[in-house]
Image (tube, rainbow, N blue to C red):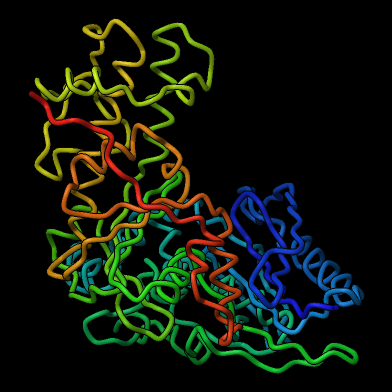
Length: 464
């Protein structure tokens, strides 16, 4: 029997992926593609948008020819902080500028000063000062640095919506892309910030629609329901919202650890902003409290240092298991032993070592446990930023740290009043995008069956 399927393009910064999900929301096909970077008109590395576009069109055309899996839905999950600028005919006008590209500091400082100061501007827009990662500032940079290009821009689309436009022909904006550290949105007024209007940018951005919007689109003799795309961080949250009736916080881990509380829409304070907390916009334009830590990058850096220091091969840290005796010894005399490269424990009122010193640890296992203890302490403070006053006793951990036994056991120990759940499902962003165009998808028990969600029980005995 033929199974109707939902097709999803999931564009990460490194890997571009294509999935088919059947009517039971089970993955029946996947393929991964990497593209060599090109350089933009300033010589800076950039994603090869033309090649990606042709791959997407070719891949989808091939999927339509597969009679065993009739495609009925199509949607997109993609990284944010990137804009595609279109002319009147809908052609992309410029190179696909990399969000790692520098913006002149004096240009951005001038903008901040015109609207109060950096703290006021960033708090109102719930956007830490991140240069090109604040996608609204990309358009500001083009207007001031490449005025001839700017004059030709009719519309600017975030990457997920550009992907959708390639197939639906609809130019729209969408809440999760507009409301994710873009510097575009005033979260207090629930509208574009005044600077966006003053610069004439509002007319460049098409109408904002709900992320659940889709359009019936014809492809030869096929009629496909095409979604408007979703920002990948928000896509990862959707399955948990739809699969759990209880309140929870999601801690999505990897290079970044992003904590999101769908049930906390409180206004961002200056103190929270200083600790790298921010607000997102949810799929219907409601506020979501979030916090960020460069946890994975810090973890890998420190583990590499430890492996070199103790004479172990690269990747040895992955074999280290939780050891009760080591943990007991370390928590009896808590101290800070690590000087972090990317994290700032002192921002959370935690101790910070002046220099990294692991000389008192005879083995890498002891040094590693101490590292994780200090990282968990910082992570817990970041979690507290999103807990707020909401009554929550459940935390989901997905991504890389969900499989780290030492990290999870210590997290459970220091959060005894919370239930900690982990998942080994790695396709959350694609799955979230698929759920958006499947209003009748089977939600019952899919967190347990598909996501393999399990509650983590503490194996740690109390210290005598």
